[in-house]
Image (tube, rainbow, N blue to C red):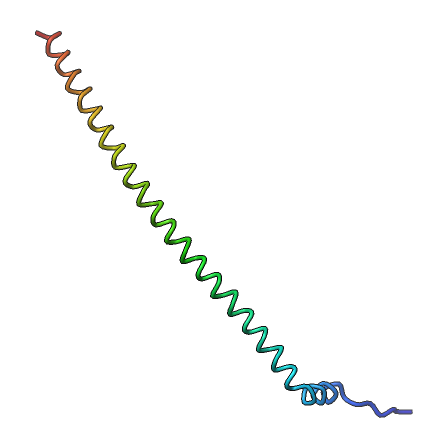
Length: 90
């Protein structure tokens, strides 16, 4: 004994056709939410890059100053050692 059954695709298709406006609204809302998160993320990345650029500039300035102080300190020490070695040798 065979029973008549409605194919599932027909039932889904009829449901989709009946509620097309609701499905369209839900899909649109999902796309808007994803776009909102994407824009928000890109703005945060841009702000973080600007902050990192300013921090790196400050670090480079500080490093240049420290290297200059080191060179000045080592240069004086080398001159002092040369002077002392010359006095000892003479």
